[in-house]
Length: 54
View 1 (spheres, helix red, strand yellow):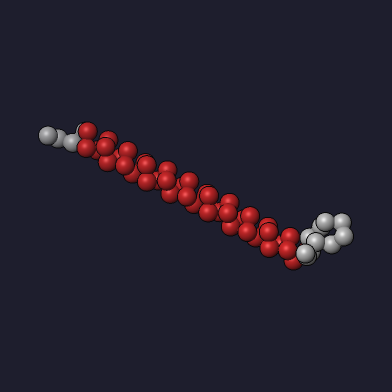
View 2 (spheres, one colour; view 1 turned 90 degrees about the vertical axis):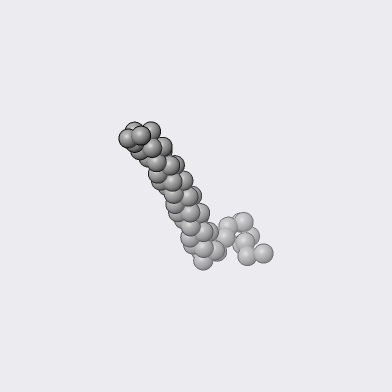
């Protein structure tokens, strides 16, 4: 409904879409980073446990 005759969106809507897109990209980056950090921590626990004095 907010599209003009040519099918283009209003400038405010384009800015809102860019903001949402940045939010999604930031969330993906954080999730990927957190997953790798957690996996690295688990790997570190296994490594330390394997080399512990028994």
